[in-house]
Image (cartoon, rainbow, N blue to C red):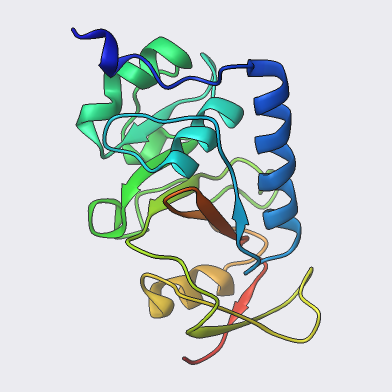
Length: 184
């Protein structure tokens, strides 16, 4: 294994992790808002997805990784165990590799928080496309989404369902399950 495959962690883990956590929290609280995160890189992942994993995953976080070239990096930096779709807390990859949504845990009526979060790698992330409404959105927001129909079906399950973190380059946006999705 080459050292380059394992490099790319936060240079200053405490500060970089705190900045990334704040950016993720801000994006989750304001669905559709695109924020930048920096300080991490991993083979096969965008910088934003790498920062999300370094910030939110650890040895107790089962991850379904649809990006095989990042497996050694994830194990080294986070210690996160590999999981299948049905047993993961996080799933990471491009939409085509992650879909369909049915196998992922969506929580239970007593424990809706026991659901998966999908970290979706996107070619680009723009404030265009589907109209979003719901908690944290003043009026409406627009966001490019990988499969609006599947995500509308996910939102109908609320309070159950999946949360998404969409990543492209060093940018990310969040789509909590409480967000309602209109047309493009």
